Image 1 (tube, rainbow, N blue to C red):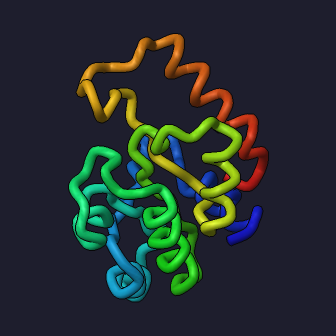
Image 2 (cartoon, rainbow, N blue to C red):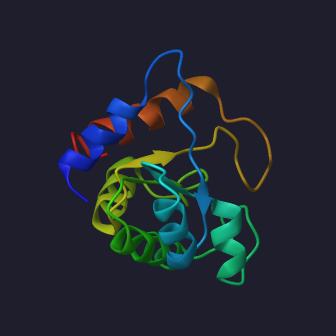
Amino acid sequence: MTTDSAATLRALHVPGSPLVLPNVWDAASARAVQEAGFPVVATGSAAVARVLGYEDGEDTPVGEMMAAIARIARVVDVPVTADVERGYGLKPAELAERLAEAGAVGCNLEDSDPRTHELVDAGAQAEFLAGVRTAAGDEL
């Protein structure tokens, strides 16, 4: 995906107009969503994890999750946004880099720790999100 795909995804977020993000779990479901006419596809962490043989909650090795996202992005011509749970323990810059390499131009990041199921401190979450946003530049 390109900077143009990121701009397309941003443009689809219109205040007051919900953006439907159909969740996909593999290349075949991504193609089906695109063929149905949706302008974007979104991965679902739980669905992808289960297809790969893992449970949700960051049990999937990060390399396998990124490879699944890359397969999905490779087969569609629309922007891909990825549910990457809490970031699989990656630092913001590495997370942004790996998502961009996989072809994702957006992401969903949870505000709870998958190990404790507790909310992350709001300040720490804001810092993490700001780090990802800064590292991503115009690509994510």
